[in-house]
Amino acid sequence: MKTKTLKKNKVNVITLGCSKNIYDSEVLMGQLKANKFEVTHESTDDDASIVIINTCGFIDNAKQESIDTILEFAHAKQAGKIEKLIVTGCLSERYKPELEKEITQVDEFFGTRDLPRLLKSLGADYKHELVGERMLTTPQHYAYLKISEGCDRPCSFCAIPLMRGNHISIPEEELVTQAKLLAAKGTKEIILIAQDLTFYGLDIYGKRSLADLLKRLSDVNGIDWIRLHYAYPSGFPMDVLDVMKERENICNYLDMPLQHISDKMLKSMRRGITREKSIELVKRIRETVPEIALRTTLIAGYPGETEEDYLEMKEWVEQSRFDRLGIFTYSHEENTHAFQLTDDVPDEVKKERAAGIMDVQQIISRELNEKKVGNTYRVLFDRKEGNFFVGRSEFDSPEVDNEILVDAKEQYVRIGDFANIRITAAQEFDLFGEVVN
Image (cartoon, rainbow, N blue to C red; front, side, top):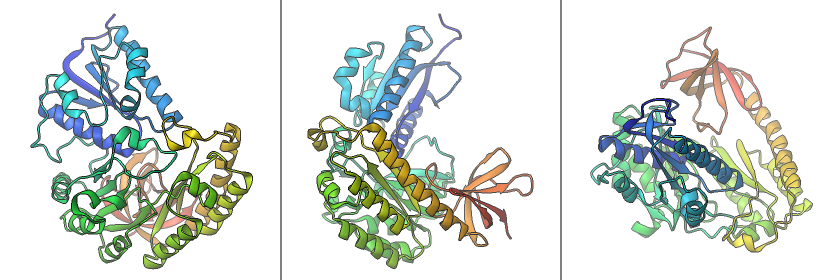
């Protein structure tokens, strides 16, 4: 039985997964709003007649979260609490036949490139003139900017090409237009995202054009920070670092998932790079941009990973002293190249190895943070949480990296603005500071 009156043209969009899904949801919501729908994102009001779930299908945990969320709203529909349930995104792209069979309360399933069809199912038109128009789900002062879709890399463990298709770059002109629209609305930081930033331009310009794109985005008035996420190591275009050095509004920050360091593992993972070349690349990046903060991501428990492979990775992490590091336990994904291999590392061993790497990184992070005490940084403030204003330096990305906290009982900063902060204390993954004029 309905507990309240549902608003006929109100849509609640639920987003699961990565920043690329956040971007897609924002575009979807912008289109719906232009079609006169009332749109909310992850609202708890429970008065929307339509719910759209943008799913993730990357690894086991993400898939389970997506399925649990679909089931939650399927039960809500059964109870009359919503009228229409639509599922889109990566899980839907990858497992549509199975989902249609198992969860019959869902009205329609759509894939990652089905936005026009999804809108049509709601009686809405896809408006081509809305290039760059979207409803931000992030705070207004920062936004994700997706520069390409899909991926052409052959990584053995990755299901992204199955869900997102082949690499397609978005033309520079369109991206510059999007950046200008964001800047006009108060966005100060844009975070470039793609499955592989370094492949940008190859399909439409015949060359790696990330450096050219960065120059054009850097010229957009009002954009104070440009941040780079997800750069593939093999074939990394070094001219990107030259632009980073010469342009003040390009953050000295690079997110480059390296995945492993053992030659045996890298070969099996089909990464197109060796231990020696990985180490040399990190060295060259740091020599070219000495101030750079390097973030990487690793995988623990890939098929065939021995204790020796793990210890080699652990020793390399100790030596490399990455500024930021995350690690996943390997997920055995059907239809990937690695699915042909035996998933022979027990789950508890995968978790132990991942925890061992993070123990090392925690020590490194604390040591690097302690060296920052006494230094002053330009900080962009994202929110107030409890008794603290919470912000980030150019070396930190939202959600995943260190944060800088200022005591709100002692000092005031405005959310969405920059302030100069002197670091007064350090923890493993957070810094504390005070405003300086």
